[in-house]
Amino acid sequence: MDQHAIEVTDLHKSYGDFEAVRGLSFHVARGEVFGLLGPNGAGKTTTVEILEGYRERSSGSVQILGHDPARATRELRRQVGIVLQSSGFYPRVTVREAVQHWSLLYPHPRDVDEVIGLVGLTGKEDARAGQLSGGQRRRLDLALALVGDPEVIFLDEPTTGFDPAARRTAWGVVQALKDMGKTVLLTTHYLEEAQTLSDRVAIIKDGVVVAEGPPAELGVGGDRYRVAYDQNGGRVELETEDPTDLLHRLTGDALARGERLQGLTVSRPTLEEVYLELTDGGVETETEVE
Amino acid sequence: MSGATLLWRQYRFERRLFWRNPSAAFFNFGLPLMFLLLIATVFHTDKTELNTLIPGIAGLAVMANTFTALAFNLTFYREQGILKRVLGTPLPKGTYFGGIIASAVTNAVFQVLLIVALGHLLYDVSWPKDWVALFVFTLLGVIANGSLGIAFAQVIPNFDSAPAYVNAVFLPAIFISGVFYDDRHLPSVLKGIAEALPLKHVIDGLHGAIVTGQGVADNGGAVLALVLWGAFGIYASIRWFRWE
Image (cartoon, rainbow over all chains, first blue to last red; front, side, top):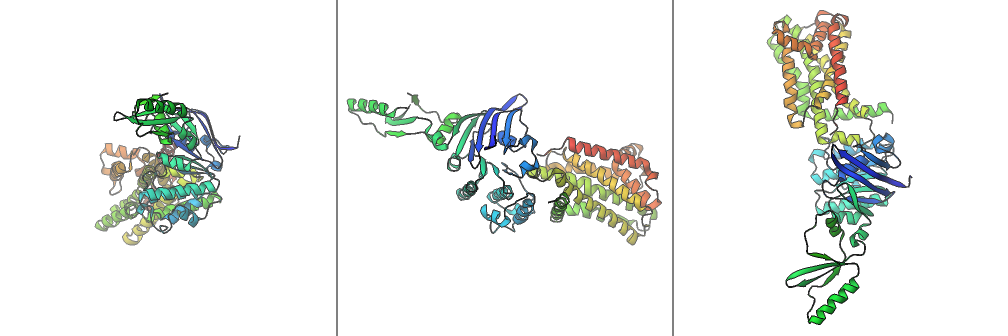
C-alpha cells in the first residue's frame, strides 16, 4: 500500500448542495511529477487542499506517504512541502531570515544558501519580503516549501504571473526536484508547463477525472488522427482512427475530379486540443467524426 | 529540537517583527506613554488625579498591547495567508500562538512597570503597596484582554477595516473605564456598561495595588469579572478561529 506517494480513491467533497469533487481517483508514484489540469471550478484546488490537509473530505480515502492528511500529524507535515496558490509573508523579514527561520521547523533541513540558490534568489538574501517583485516572492514561497527537504511537494499554480524567463527557472527547479527523487503534485493553467514537467497528468472536469496518462499519450488521444484540407475557401477537418483508408479515399476522389487537395495535413491532436475538447473549452469547429 | 527552544525562537522572531514595524510600535507602546506624560504634566499638582491616572494608564497599556495588538496582528496574518502557511508546517499551533502571545505579554508587562516607575519618579505617586496584587491584576488583565483580542480578530472581516473595528471598542472603553478621571461622576448607564467590560476591573485592581494597598482578596469582584472574560475569550478564540 505504501508504494505510491499519493493515493486518492473515490474522493468526494460537497459544500452544502454543491458537489465540488465527485468520485475522484488517481495515484502518484514515488519520484513522479504529476500534473493536475482542469478549468477554474473543476475542483483542482479543493482536491489539492484536501491532500494538503487544509480541508476535510466528505468521503473517499486519501493517503499521503501512508498518512491520512485529515489527521495531519507533525510526522506528515515534516515530509510535505506546500506552495499555496496565493499567500503573503511577513513583509519586514529578509529572504535569508525567512528561509533560516523556516529551516528550524524541520528535523533535517537543506542548507539555507543552497535552497536560496536553487530557487534563483541569490543576491536577494538581504532584501525584505515586502520589497520583492511578484515573481521573486513566488520563488521565496518555493524556497520555504523546499527548505525542510520534503518527500512530497505540492505546487498549486506555481508560475502564474511569471515572465517566460522566470518560468524556465521554475521549471529547472521542478526538474531538479525530480532528479532528487522527490514526488511533485503540480496544478497549472499552462498546458505547455504540464507537458514539459509531468510524467503523467490527469485532466479533471466537474470534480471527476476525464483523462489520465503521460502527456504524450494523452496528446495522441488514443489512435486518433486529424486530416484537414482546404475546400471552397473553407477548411475541412476529419478525424479518423484509420488515416490510410481515409487518405486513400480522399486522394482518389480528388484525382478522379482532377483537383488538388490544397493545404492537406495529417496530425495527431496536441495535449492542448485534447484538454480543450474534454473540458468543453474548445472553439467550435466544423468537425466530422468518421 | 525541544518545545522550549522552538517557543523561544518563535518568540524572538515575533520580537523582531514588532520592532521592525514602527507604526505598530508607536500605537501600542508609545501612545500610552504619551498620554501619561501629557496628562500628568497638566495635572502634576493634583495628587488625587495622579493617583487615578497612573493605574488608569497602566490599564490602558494592558489593553493596547494585548487586545488591540493581537486583534490587528491576527487579522493581518490571516489576510496575508501567513496563518495558512504556518498551518502547513510541522510547527505546533500552540508554539506559534505562544510566540505571538508571549511577545504581546512582554510589551504589556514591561509597560506597566515603566508606567509605575515613571509615576513614582516623575510625579511622586507611591511605589505599589501590594506587588502581588499588581502582578495578579496585570496577569488577569493580559489574559482577558489578549484572548478577547484574538476572538475579536475573528469578527473583523479584513485588515482595511481593522482600525475602525478595534477603535470602536478601544476608545469608548478607555473613556468610560476611568483611565483619565475618576469614574464616580459617570452617568449610571455608562457606569453599568463599564462594569460589564474588563478594563475597569483591571484598573480597579491596579489602583488598589498601587494607591490604596487593597490586595487580591479585597477585589474579589474584579478578579471574578476578569476570570469570566478570560474564559469567554479563550473559548471564543478557539471555537471560532479562522485560519483563512
